[in-house]
Image (cartoon, rainbow, N blue to C red; front, top):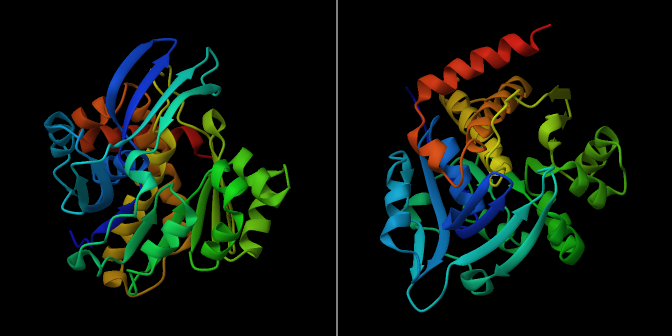
Amino acid sequence: MWSMPLIVTGTIGIDTIHTPTGSAEAVLGGSATYFAAAASFYTPVRMVAAVGGDFHDGYRTTLSRFPEVCIEGIDVRPDSKTFSWGGRYMENMNVRETLFTELGVLAEAPPATPQRYRDSKYVFLANTHPGVQRELLEGFPNRAIAVADTMNLWIETAKDDLVALMKQIDGLVLNDEEAALLTGRRNPITAGKAILDMGPSFAVIKKGEHGCIMVHREGIAALPAFPTDLVIDPTGAGDSFAGGMMGHVARTHAESHFGGEGVTFDMLQQGLAHGTVVASFTIESFSLDRLAELKKDAIDERYRQFSAAVQI
């Protein structure tokens, strides 16, 4: 199989999570972590992120369970602390409260991209400050596609940086509340079109248990969530969704005339389905536990089930 590494920049975190089903203390999390784990089922993945001296061998062992993830780009800062977050989900797991946030290394200079990573053609800028995302993006001059994630914090506090970033990326991933906050439009279709007016060729708007919508210059695609009856912890579902989507896109684009043509609407639409399926596994456990034991055959089987369910 022809493949070319996908690179992700973002956060590695230490999470403490409480849900109606139980709790998990100081487990591995972070936007780049979930993304890389999910994407690695499709293509090799390179991570660029920073951690502190509290990032112990147990976390490294978890990452080692994803052999297609290259962690040479993780910057270990012994005198600092890893970003950490604590949250509690309500009975309606679409609602959560943040218990604490400790920025740690995120309050410091961003990690440098290793020189040997700079040939990466498939770039995902996982959730972090848009100014940092722009700085990191400049390190990949030969990219075939660059997609960014964002959140309400940056829309509210760093909108100018985000708007500048959007002129340089191909796609933006965000949820429906964030899309409304960014554009002032509640309808996800009109919000998506407004995002395209800001620069990207497409916007993927996540709607949680109600699936996702992609607004693209060539059309619109919509998918439901995978119908699952097991939800243990929704943390990382959105990042896993993005990882599955981008992993599929990177693999199929590289295989298509060795990536000589652009990323197509069809590649992205199929990527939405793959992302939806991988995310449906993530929520079945705390942290990366379910993904770490997952085999590609199980993803393929669930993808077949999902394809049959949404077929018209």
